[in-house]
Image 1: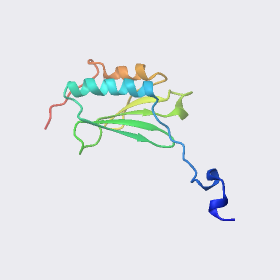
Image 2: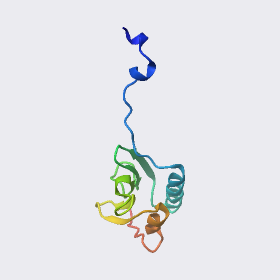
Image 3: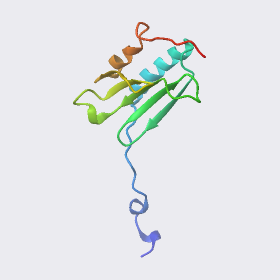
Image 4: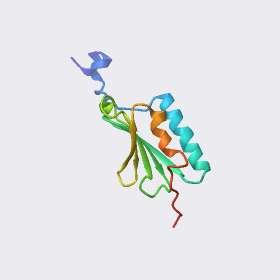
Length: 117
């Protein structure tokens, strides 16, 4: 029996499942990103999808480490909540079950803008 005789499903490489942001979640994150870009605080972003988490990283400059990471970890959904905002030093600023509640950490009173060097 050759590969041409096998059904297509058995020839395909196994797919690895990855965690991703849903459309509504990504919409909330990109709205926040747009506001921060308009304020001149963020200039670039990256989205990372892995097997155990998805992350949206916001950068002041593309060549630097991210200022903030917004992560979705479904494994923590029952415990602390699937969503978290993590600062540059690895400090978790907020964690919760609802993304819109977690993103409130970026309200003006919480943000400290550092002058550019």
